[in-house]
Length: 161
Length: 158
Image 1 (cartoon, rainbow over the protein chains, first blue to last red):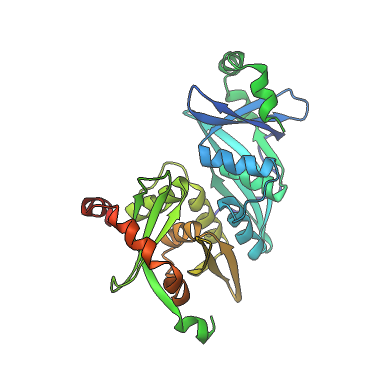
Image 2 (image 1 turned 180 degrees about the vertical axis):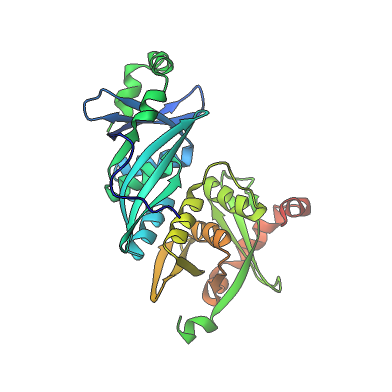
């Protein structure tokens, strides 16, 4: 059980979810995170159900029955746990890692998560989303630019929030 | 749990997860201990997989969504005491998840798929009310079962 001290030991940058796109090359979805100044961009590939969980929250769609991340929030609400923030912490072998920081009773906790789940939860709890400097540095910008060149402008417009 | 509710609850086990050949959904088969009752619940592909992974003891390299929920409850010493399939309306099943954190007990509304995926990860008992079993619609169940051949059951049996 990881109890964290207040404050983060690593430099982190606050990010916003800018949109969600379909990646036809990988048959997956991409969550686009950007910082406030649009200086940093972090694309995260996610599965279909995670993408739909993020999309529902972005578009403020309330499903007739609670979806899995709505249930996650209900359970946290029921025990009066609060999501403080989520942080995309690491990138290793093309897999992104995240932490969900929560407060419960008088303690703070840090829980290992996939970024997709962490983001879906952050959007439902209005918790800030951060990326560590390490992750922003690690992601190969060249590869990203190459990939972006393949996209048409309308792909961006369609899903942007 | 009040005594009235207790008397009407039937414990169920997850018997298996089957792909529905007619749609993109999956079917979770719940049975009682004597195998005299069967309750099939249609679930989405992601939820079906989440249940199937837990049944087969598959541990994915990264925590899946229900693993994260379990992780939260473990961190907060919160126990899932039981999950109950409570109602069915217009072919939609309803469930509740019963939580205990110290002295505090809470009940959370859930789809049965999430409740079952979570129960399997926390070794929590799964119940259905007698009322739901009565109203699940026997006729359509028979028709549905006929569409499966015996081998389909064998393959997915746990």
